[in-house]
Image (cartoon, rainbow, N blue to C red; front, side, top):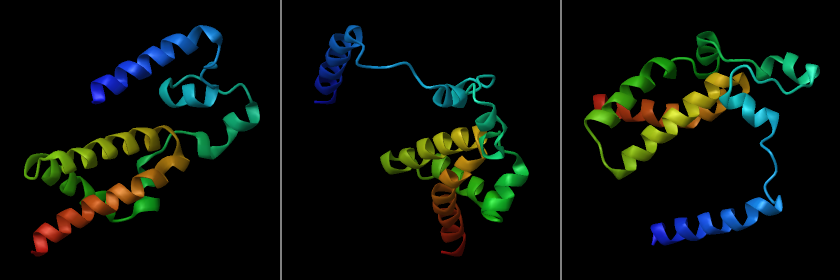
Length: 126
């Protein structure tokens, strides 16, 4: 079923691509993946929220969860590996990657860091 849906989606993209339906990727999106890409707007480029995150910023926003959630991630990857835990691992990697690129995206890591810290604390208490 998923293969058929992916195939239909690729056909739609193949048909719509020459018509110009999909525009170029914006410079803000490119800036998330390519480190040296700037938006071209000096005002946006100078805003502190758009700079790369530091370890101090993670501790400022997440506090003690910064130290507990890696334990929960290790427990999820090693001891409790199933389909549901693979979602947690992928969400963790994506949230960390994007939050490391831009300080204001650290808020994306708060839900998954809380979940992983809860897994670690719950397993130690129980």
